[in-house]
Image 1 (cartoon, one colour):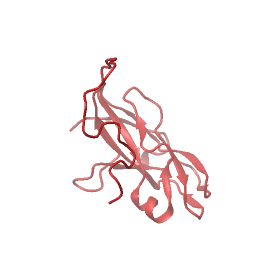
Image 2 (tube, one colour):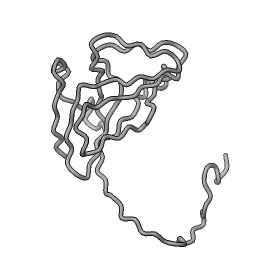
Image 3 (cartoon, rainbow, N blue to C red):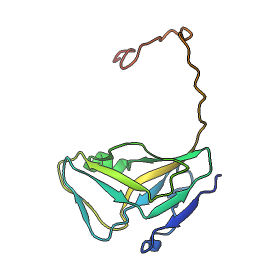
Length: 148
């Protein structure tokens, strides 16, 4: 288990600390820290603040991903999914929601709008080469294995 330092935006302390909804959840929900209802029309997008500031230890990042229920029922997603929060970012976490659906999407203060996972990572060291080792796949990509 990793320890993440959290600061809550003034006026949104009633949201409480982030929490996992079930014992084995990989992600926790992010809430809309907005004073009034926000409407995202079909085809539009909006940056929604979460009221959450965080400090992660080196070697960790946060991934922000859409809520599956919003995606399947309303066509709501995240423009830059997954959104990445680096360990050196200290600003308020925001979520760029997009409405791919056919109806207006209304967001109220405190609504759960996205989910966040904490991920451990390693930075890579890059080595310039002229050739790669051979593999069966080679340069095959984007559908190279067929449909069935």
